Length: 334
Length: 295
Image (cartoon, rainbow over all chains, first blue to last red):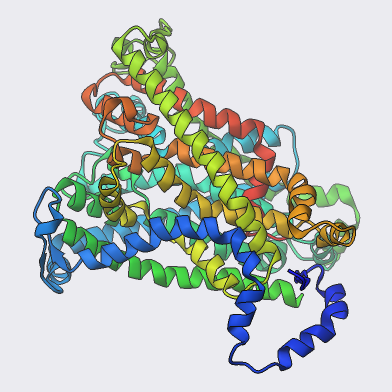
């Protein structure tokens, strides 16, 4: 490797360009046809660093995606005797889109994702704002608030299942004690209340994440700007709305997207607490797919569901990447 | 608007003006603390009750006869419950540690390359790595299950380590890249001028500086693997192989009324990650936000 590889990084760019500027110019003037191959060859050593990561990802990601798409066009007998699968074209897809369960589950997923994301974000952001000023016991308070996010979702589900218990649950006992109801309500055993009850659990686990992100974001808001606004007579609300909030738009976008994806993909809380019941009232896409595949062994239909999910997530992913790279561009311009 | 000008100049008055917001903030914080802490406190209180004391209406707000029987039962290797629990605990520890170590070995060079080198396809590869985060376990579950069965890894910890690696990798790479981005490149340039190879500069200069990032990423992978449920639940069916989340789920689907035991198990399952998190909180929070928030 005689050719010195220039350090092309943000920080070092200016200095490096001065040194290698001429070489760079020479290289650019070469004919274009072989330039891609040449470039790859020149950087061959770089790939060694990422190769292990790529290989692992290929085996466990690219192959499964291909396999899922393939399987979604087949009907499979139960018991995973995959040699006996029969090609059925788009039948799995039409079966899904014409079933009633599909629409119930989709509706549930939308409510679950939207409510969890929006409320977690608002609560997390508000907590971050309230914790921004330093006071006695702030560190302790922050640590306690983050714990629900660290513990396992399985533990969280069992804790809340016990709290919601229809005979001995603590919330029911309080409601009865205060004389609000005669007997403890069935939070997770009745169609009407199950989804909101599960959303409360999910928010309990998710808002600390929004809080951490927004706390870090708040630290980047320049103090001078806030003080200048204050001198100009802006009220606390105006300072927040016109200075703090616009400054946090990028962090907010990334946080909301990550929350939305995490909520869309959540499985453990509904699965452990209700298993999707009663009568599908708490089934969301992921739990439904799981049940189709591993419960009823309808692998083809479950795969078709996965492919649909995949398409939805790719759309979300597009915005995710755009939000991330948009940030980069801004940073570079600044 | 003369009052505004005054309040801006005199600190005592200004504080009074903000009081309304400050009180709102305090009350809000108190409510959030209540929401966060009460379930955890109730878990602890239930875990030190007897099975009979837990099943009462109205409940015993404070256990009348606190007992550590549930903990003793879970930690006693001579009875079947305790033996199972300790086995699950050990399995979780083994799988999580192995995942963390292997993950770092793969993620550190990759993150460094994504941070420092400009090779063709760098952005494409980086974003495709990130995109993995978008997809739920379930999408990969069916084909992976079939794949694992095909290579004979079902019912082994190997199947878990391999899958945990991949879903931990994107995040690990992202977190570590954030750290490398913040290490001044001039340090490596100086090392190169002094005659170090690129690899030497990486190992001798950058690696020691990125220890906080590596610690943070390690905690993150460990907690992720420790808490993972769906793959463990699907890939493992033999009792002696199960990790804690799947093991507890399977155990208590058979003993549905032993809530003190369940709460004690949930508590002990949370202890390692919460302790780890509290001790290394600084690194952890910093790592998570480094990627999304640039200083």
